[in-house]
Length: 133
Ligand SMILES: [Zn+2]
Image (cartoon, rainbow, N blue to C red; front, side):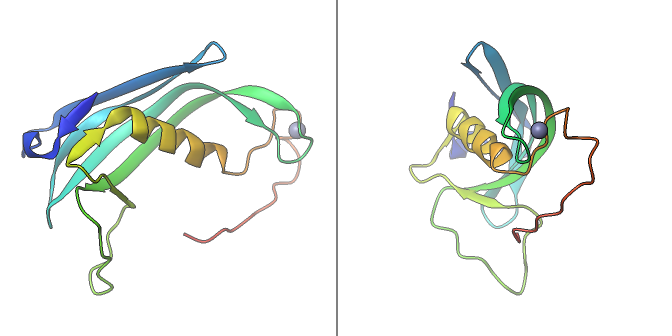
């Protein structure tokens, strides 16, 4: 699914992507709408199943994912304005097209890069890791 930036107006436009990895389906479903400053806001949900590796014991398990995703999309190089920080991360999509499969991939990798405990370790004392924003 590839949506030209010009097609996104003030009416919410659906964005959907799904992929299968090792028999587990992961979906990104949401809507696109205009945001100020020439940006487009994506409000979506990442859901399905994803294999993760436990950060404590190294075991691999399949987790049920149901995560809200809030992003701003830019069709050009985005220069942050320190005076007006944005509430959500900005993803640059050069070429003027919104690539749903790319967004699903990047959200999947971002989720995977987080800190995860398998069900066996989940009951243990949580360890906080702050990697900054
Ligand atoms: Zn574990």
